[in-house]
Image (cartoon, rainbow, N blue to C red; front, side, top):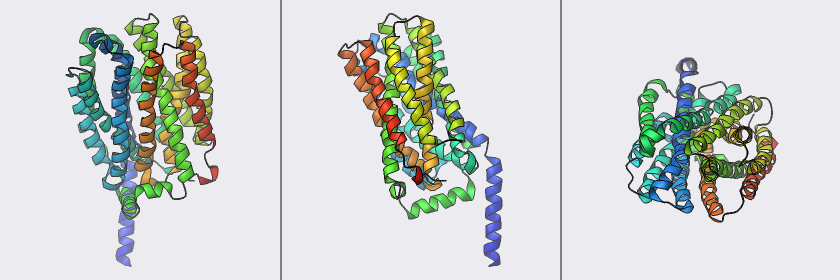
Length: 413
C-alpha cells in the first residue's frame, strides 16, 4: 500500500514537473515544424510556372506532380499517426523530419517529372507523419481547457510558413531557380531535427498511460467506438476542405499567370492567400474555445464558399481588389482548414490524438490529391474563370454542411 502511494506521488511529481517543463518549448517547436510543413508542401505551387516552362509540361502533368506530394502525405498521416500513439510521438516526429528533409533536398536534382513525383511522394510521407505527432505533442503539453486553442494556434505555423515561403520564393526564385527553392526546403527540415531532439519532451507519465491504453485497444477501434458517425463527418469535412484549399493554393498563382500576371506577382498572391489563412486561423482558434468547434469552422467554410465564387468574378480585377478577395478566401477557407486538428483534439480522447488527427488528415490528403488533379482537368477544358471558381465553391459548402451535422452529444467534454 505504502509503495503504491509512494509511486503515485512520484508519478504526480513527474507529471507536474513535465507539465511545467514543456508548456512553451513543445508548442513553439511544433509551431516551427508546422511552418516547415506549410512551406514545403506549398512551395511547389509557387515554382510550378517555372517548372512548367522549363519542361513544357501539360496542366495534367503538373497536377500529377502536386498529387504525388499529397498522396505521400495521406499515407504518412494514416500510418505514422497510428504508430505515434503506439511507439512514441517524438520518435515518429524525428523520423518524419529526416525523411522529409532527404526527399525534399533530393527532389532538387530531378531530371524530369517522374523523378520529381517520386521524391515529392517521399517528402509527403514525412510531412504527413509530422502532423499527427505535433498535434498530440502540443495537446499533451497544455492543460485540458486550453488544448483546442493551443493546437489551433500551433497550426498557425502552417500559413505562416506558406506565406513566408511565398514571399521568399518570389524574391529569390529569379536568382536561384526552382531547384534552389527545393534545396532550401530540405535544409530547413534538416535543421529542425536537432532542435526537436533538444527541446521536445513527451509528457512523462501521462503519455505512458496513453500509450498503455492504445496497446490494450487498437487506435482505430477507439476512434469508432461510439464515435463512428462523428468520425465519418470529420473525415468527410476534412476531405472537402482540403480539396478546395489545395485547389486554391495550387492553381491560383497559375490562373493569375495565365491572366497576364508576372511570376513574382502570381507567387505574391499565393502568399496573400496564406496571409488570410493566418488571420482566419487565429480568429477561429479563439472562437472554438468559446463556441462549438464544428459549427464555428462550418460557418467559416459556408461564408468562404461565397467568397470563392466571388473571387472568380474578380480574377481580372485590379491588384487592390484582387488582394481583398484573395485575403478573404484565405481567412475563411485556409483558416478553417488550419483548425481541423483542433476539432479532432476536442472530439477524441487523449490516448488516440495522433491516430484521430492522422485518420482525418489522411482522408483529407485524398482531397488534396483530387483538388489539383480536378483543377488540371478543368483548366484543360478551358472553362471560364468565373465557372471554375463557382465549381470550387461547392466542396466548401458541402464541408460546412458536414460539420453542421456533427453529433453535439457525442463531443468529448
